[in-house]
Image 1 (spheres, each protein chain N blue to C red):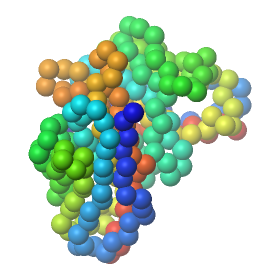
Image 2: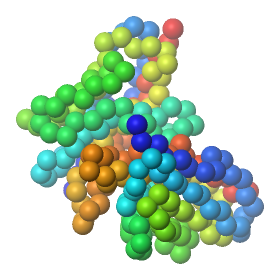
Image 3: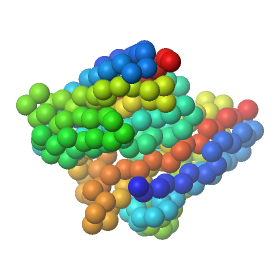
Image 4: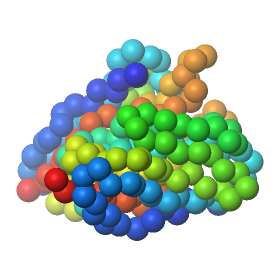
Length: 115
Length: 118
């Protein structure tokens, strides 16, 4: 079945440091890939997405490129801020059963950015 | 972006009572909504898939008689936790899939409901 593996945290960085959170996936066909972010006590917010190979999703300084050859979708940001502290989830979506598009999530990576 | 409203954000109830959680897509139609449960410091566990006008599809191990799902319109799905017990205490999150022509089938999430059963 489908699966998503992302680097385990927690990750602790200083402000303005470079961030990479690795994510690899296993799926048949051509899934869409997502990064969601969850701030404390809140639901998930879509951070960025990519729907086909070589697509680059970007938002708020974060980027991730859909690499089919390595089945990866690593999240990067050049200079993190304290406000980026949150849990980041990598996920894939593939049509499953009729018109359903279930999301398969990684376990999440807690990022803490210190001033 | 698309907005999903989930209500209430927090509920405390006595053991044995039932609790209803609402999930609304505010600016798009959602033929499919999803209900998740999240344990502390863990990922989301899909409980069920809710399709407008039909019965929900439950994941293995989820009791359909305890977690009643109704998806009566294209913008509203409800989850009712029946006869709640302390072990049902958790963070419940809904999502709605934007199935419109430009929606990209992306799931948008509600802010979650913290259920505490005393």
